[in-house]
Every structure is written in C-alpha cells, then in structure tokens.
Image (tube, rainbow, N blue to C red; front, side, top):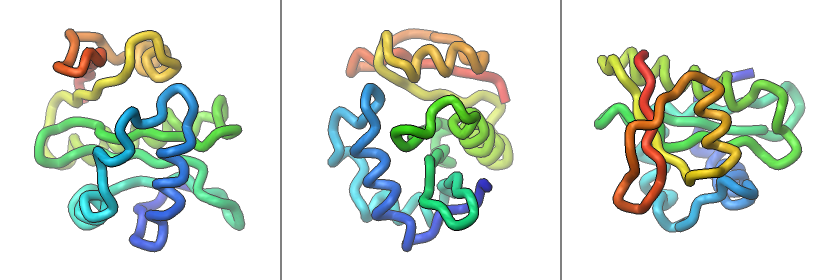
Length: 138
C-alpha cells in the first residue's frame, strides 16, 4: 500500500495537494514540478495506493533539514489511517538520513494540527508565516 513515488505519479500528487480542503497549500507555487522531481530522486516521496486504485495520499521528508514538508490525503480518504502511515514512512526516511528529531509546520486550528497533536507531535513555536511548528523525536 505504501511505495516510493515515481515521476509518473507527479500529476496525481499535485492534484491531491491542490485539492485538499483545510490543509491545501496556501501557495501552490511553493513546490514546483522541478522541485518535486528533486524530492523523487533524493527524498523519497511516499504514496499510498491500493491495488487498482488511484493514489490516496503522499508524504515526504526533506533529507537536507529533517523536516516533513508534505503530508496530504485525498478528499474522501480521511479516517482510514492513510495519513498516519504516510507520516510514519516520512519520519522513518528522516531517521535513516540521520535525524533524531523531525519538524513540520501547519496552520493553527487546522485539522492537520489536531492530527499532529494526536500523533504525539509537540508544538514548539511559530514560523515566520505564522504557522505552528511541531517536532517529534524519531
């Protein structure tokens, strides 16, 4: 169900990223297709896909700084454990890259904030954009 993404998956990943309600990217141009391709080569980017179904979500950590930069689940796929499994895969990748702590950020009051708190992440402050910054030991 979880596998590494390929270049052929990029259109679906952008479709999910741009279509997720409360946790949609505020700036869809923040990660371009060229940057996403870099993460495919250096990430990895993890996807959740049931046999004979479309990709239902994706996640990725940045091996350069130990952050989880993406966690998106397609509309209608919430509550199935997909997000938690993908987040664990991204964190495992960061652990393998040598990090002892992972960080991420999200909008205050969002469903993502509740998800991260429930998964044991601790809020440690705010980013320059006003997002909550979380961390979790790996």
